[in-house]
Length: 249
Image 1: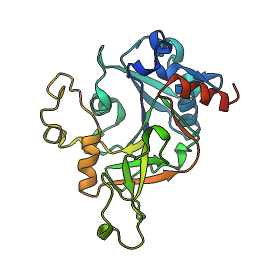
Image 2: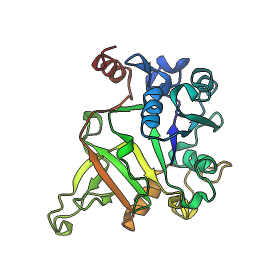
Image 3: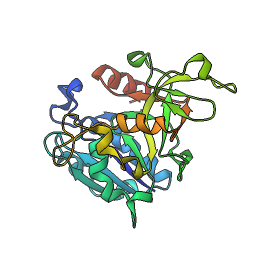
Image 4: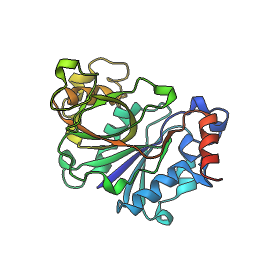
């Protein structure tokens, strides 16, 4: 299995910290956020990593090199001055994420601006669905959550009605952690699903991943798990500082 780390965001909410440093390279606990991911991927036996870049793209190879000192090999994709969003970024990286046939090769994707103690080795290498998502308890900044996790492991895009909850399912509403295992065939019908959304007709295309996930949920092809351990979405300087303190830096 290979891994993709999303690192192309502009980090506008983190300014001025991101004026000269991309958000995934900001340090917590004595090392950049993205290095925590690289070390955890290596510990999980994942050696091939793709990092997508845009803002201050050159800083990544300057700081991370080819990844060998972290126990991985890094390939970089550059999306241009405007990031391609999560869907476009993943689509752009697909040629580097497979081996012989990318349509059959599952891969792990992680947001570069989160921190977690999740054990990546516990994620399914061969998910039974088009996507397997890690969900967490809703933080204060996303109190309503993103998706509903059913007791059978299915993930739904909306809160199920009472008469749709069967066999002890709870329909628990949780937040997407920015960690998932995907099959590239999630993109098989992406042009129809995305339609004429802004950026979809550009070359390379720019679009969000969420519509593809919701379409897959509609055909019961997204599973998930509830991670009850530590997780932080480092979306503001305050959250970055709080995480840094909690890690004892």
